[in-house]
Length: 193
Image 1 (cartoon, rainbow, N blue to C red):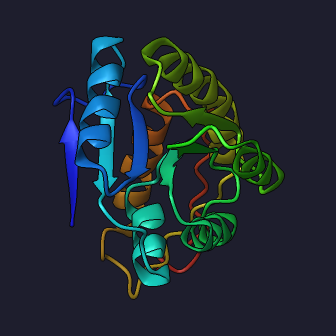
Image 2: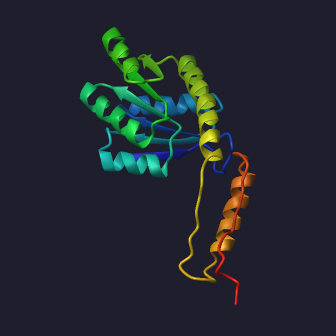
Image 3: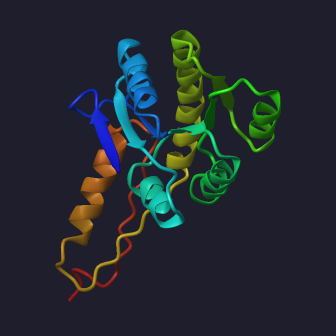
């Protein structure tokens, strides 16, 4: 039902994450090919069907896509996808691809919050430029979100390694370059006799 394609095996800070929803396998192949040819490194999760609410929640929580791209064939399914996007990933840009350059459909998509609407046949340069623009905007939003994130590590008992885990997590976050990191170990009960 879905597949993930990694264009590069190591974690790169410039790596992107796309979620593409399309029953048209040829379109999926083209979208991945265009991004790869443009030198964009990243992970593409391709769904060949519109996801149900539980699957959508899982995709957004695990894959954390920066952009959602969907082939718009059915307004009802697209409306449900956009409702799920609003609930599970409110800051994630949506790109609709229409098989017909229908002004009514494109206008409806823009009114629903789509950041871009493309029509088929897909223009390679327009698609790549759209993805690059949205990724630049997404990086700014993601840095703001990470910079304001708060993580808590609560041990079940002393000596469970929670402080070590917190220190390693803070170190990894600092090296990821996604903002400043402050680590506070406020466990007053550990280490005191």
